[in-house]
Image 1 (cartoon, rainbow, N blue to C red):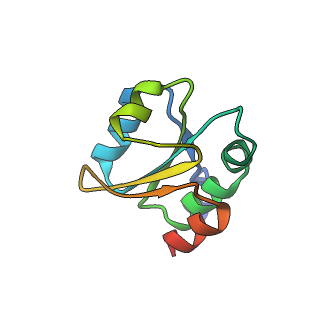
Image 2: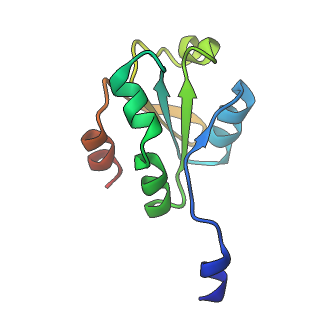
Length: 111
């Protein structure tokens, strides 16, 4: 119990490089939210606490935010057609894509 109180809560991470996303994918199940500052809906999801709340509820899944304008090579690599899009990875491979994802869809998909 004391360890639980001292452990930092799980939270969504911001991918700052291609290596950040690849490390998460290699480590296990990962949800990458592709977003952009200029898109109000995508920015609202990325800036909310939703991904951190999901991370806290699903500690074995990594949740990352990927700014598509900052990392356009990842948009191309993972064939992201628009923002917001959530790309789900398992066993090192892309297993699903949720294009135009909403908060409700993210919550429902993770349950």
